[in-house]
Length: 502
Image (cartoon, rainbow, N blue to C red; front, side, top):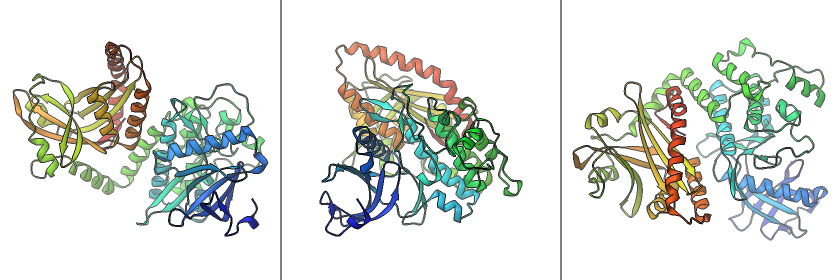
């Protein structure tokens, strides 16, 4: 479709009025358009290039739209996809939110990023990439997504109504699902100056390839130049740089914190084994650096988080109600953990209950809080809902709760958790079942809620013939937990936050 075709009479599927070309990539053209059905607000429409109108490219285009749509439901830092279809010429298109801002490439060319701004941008990019690496439910299984083309021009900066700068990662056009068959030969895809050594060599990739690209982006954001000064800009030159040359240290005049320089250079290691092994590891280190350079902000954050803990003097009506709940008469009075749903003011709230010694309860009110959900689909669908309380003095209190997804309570609890942003832990003291001694609230992160929804969907598709197989899945989850405990403790001990989510 040419620029001259963009007349007011020309509506795409009688809905999207194309206004102007705002971008062009390897697979298609992106237009700014007006959505005439939804109050004429602006959207971006990507249309597959007619030169690529063959079945292979159509499937790749469809996969890009699907991946982007599923990921954007899980992260506010990934461009949102709202529609997909074919036009009157049977050419595929998909519709995205219109980003009124500028890409990172243009931004860093004009602006010098402060260290605080750099840390904020980097953390938001990490959140987007962690969502991709955690995977989407695609063709019957959860599949991690490798972007393969993370670069400043695919990172957009917009501002919300309050003026806060929001990062949006886009263009999953050459993204790879880890479920894709290994060893398939295909031409090199990506941008040579940002791709990892293994990518430019045509090797199999995993999440660590994107981590290398992230290192390139972070280096450029801080130094406003690349880690090497190349005489010519060619694939051969970039091949040599990525596979042979050592990245240059940051110029001293930039005063980059040593921990930050070390982190970025570690991302640029030639071997994936020597890089950070996950985006979450990078995020934790960025947060630590941010707190170190801005202690006042750190104190305010900790004070805010601690203010969320329940105390006797300041309780919400819901918390007051929960504290009046008695220990169920059908539960033994011993150190157990079980799920419980509380109705309050026409809503339902998820919780877990536990019984401990009174002295232990008093010690745990200001502990670091950790939660995680693990799923076992075979031979019986079951979730381990893990809550951990930790202090250096008293160690860890492990509170595992198992949700059988083929029971009514298990299904109800997972449904409620997947739609809630928090749950409550209720403490009862041994020998005193008539009074809840204390309670704490725990966040349920978006990633966790999405996982819970996906697991519930998987469970619904499974036909279970023998319910006694639940014992096997529960045993497997217990074994997994024992293997995970050292890793979880290490994560807690390294963290500087009051609440951690696995």
